[in-house]
Structures are given as C-alpha cells and as structure tokens.
Image (cartoon, rainbow, N blue to C red):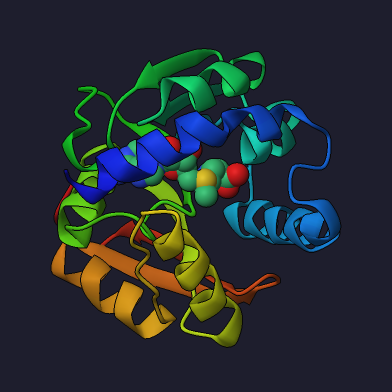
Length: 203
Ligand SMILES: C[S@@+](CC[C@H](N)C(=O)[O-])C[C@H]1O[C@@H](n2cnc3c(N)ncnc32)[C@H](O)[C@@H]1O
C-alpha cells in the first residue's frame, strides 16, 4: 500500500478527535500559533481564490475563511474532508500528487502534507499547475528537528511513514519544479514553511 493511502486511512480512522475543540490537548496553543504563522506568511486578501490541499479537518481554512474570497479544500481522506466542509466553498476528495482541477488559484496552502508524500516533486508539480501566474503558495512540513523526529517515530508506530524537511530541501525541490522560494520560516511546533511563486517564464 502506498504511503498516501496509509496516511488517508490513518486520518480517516482518527478523524473523530478533530471534531473536538482541542484535538491535540496540551499542544493546541503551539499548533494555533503555527497556523497563525502560516496565515501571516500567506498574506491573504479578500479577493483571493484559495486551494487548501490536504486541508484535513479545516483548521487552517477556518483561520483563512473570513479573510479570503473563496476556498476549495482537497484531502485524501473523505472523513477529514467532511469535517472541513463547514469552512469550504468546495471540497474534493483527492491526492495532492494526482490533483488536476484544470483551474488556478491566487493562493495555495499545503500544510503538513508533504510529510506523507512519497514523490515530493509530483506534489510540487501539482501545486505549480494550480497556481495563478501571480499566485503564491505556502507549503509547510515537519522539520528536521527533535520534535520532527519524535513525530515521525509516533506516526511510524501507527503505520505511516513521515519525511522531514529543511527549508533548503523544500527550496531545492521547488526550484526543480519551476517554483521560486521567496521566504522561509521555522514554525512553532517543529515545522518549516516556505512561500513559493512561479519562477520566471514557467506558468
Ligand atoms: C497533518 S494533517 C494536516 C491538516 C491541515 N492541513 C492542517 O494543517 O490542519 C494531514 C492531512 O493531509 C492529508 N493527506 C496526507 N497525504 C495526502 C496526500 N498525498 N494528498 C492529499 N491529502 C493528503 C491527510 O488525510 C490529513 O487530513
């Protein structure tokens, strides 16, 4: 079984916890700060059309919702997507790597998904093909850090493989897919985020 299927099954199985107000218990304040940092990096605008890939239960979408024009969420797990729907104008069950909606978005957010993606270049290529010419994408992933290693070990015990990233690795992968990194940031809670735009010429 592919890791994306293992991840989707894991999140489908555990989706119930995300219906609670504090699914991560004492880690909740740190993860709230992480979401705020992602949204700050994304610089949302009221006219933005947004694609939230791997939207999960919609916790990033919930913060973005009052600040943008339209949000489409996609997730490999239908159970997670069902929880996110209240924040979304449109929801699609799909995997990042094979997503092909035939339209482009002003802002793409993809948070905590590359952790599970086996072919990161395919994932970044999917982001590139959905990004409007002047659009921006924020990608966050578990970082090479003590927290990241702990997270990977826990998920491994739950049957899901997690990859850890540095901003340098994300930047290099993005560059190989025609995307330029314009900012990189360590996030609270052991993640790293990059802001991406089209590199000159390839849209
Ligand atoms: C750690 S959660 C993050 C959810 C949300 N982005 C957030 O920041 O709160 C990861 C989500 O990504 C989904 N996912 C994992 N691999 C995926 C893939 N290859 N394509 C689409 N969704 C994926 C899982 O089903 C899960 O809902």
